[in-house]
Amino acid sequence: MKERLDTVRAKVQALTTKVKANYYPTADWISYLEAKHLLLLNYCQPLVYYSLRKAKKFLINGYPVVRSLVEIRLFLEKIRPIDKKLQYQVENLTKVTTSTTEDVGPSGKEL
Image (tube, rainbow, N blue to C red; front, top):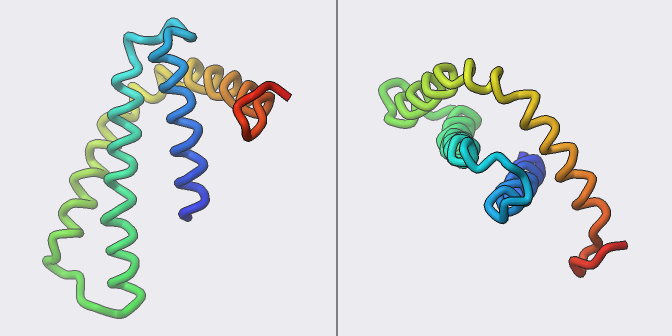
């Protein structure tokens, strides 16, 4: 799970860096991507804590982490229509970003 989170974080940071540098003409909706990125990160934290409590067979009824998970999940469901509208653009930018980051070596120089 941590490896996937690190992969997503690296891809999103690479994409937002390029957008902020006006590499892509998408500055109008980059704040949405940043907000969603933070929302997903904030969802992962209580989810891990919840999973840990469940794994150790602790009670979770009435625990604040459950309310936090429900609230964040509701936000994610409310923004789903926006995701669908931007899905094509985000996929294209992700493909371009992935291809350009693969062309760059660990030292930051082109291969």
